[in-house]
Amino acid sequence: MDGQHNHQELIRKVTMYLDNELSEHAERDLLKEIKSNPAYLRILSQEKSFREFLKSKVHRRKPSPALIQSIKDKIRIAPPA
Image 1 (cartoon, one colour):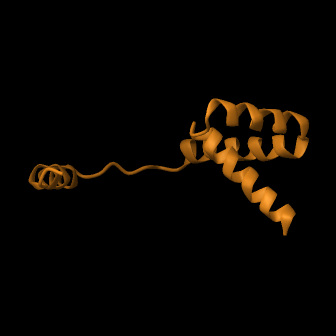
Image 2 (cartoon, one colour):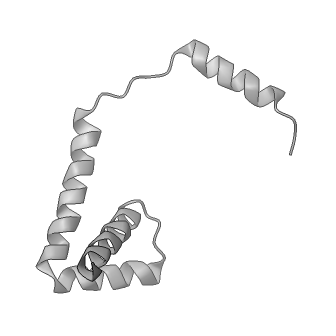
């Protein structure tokens, strides 16, 4: 169970790292861990590759002009907070 928790925590940290959500200190700590463990480096590489695959292969449809206008209209109508 502890190994599974550690793996999930590593995945969470790698995801945050790739999303630029880690503090400088946390990023340095993660990079030290990755450099000291080839398995961690593989996980980082796989996640990077998967993200690149998604960016290059998955077609993202553009929203219709009607949807964009509808959202803009709703934003204008929304009462100030």
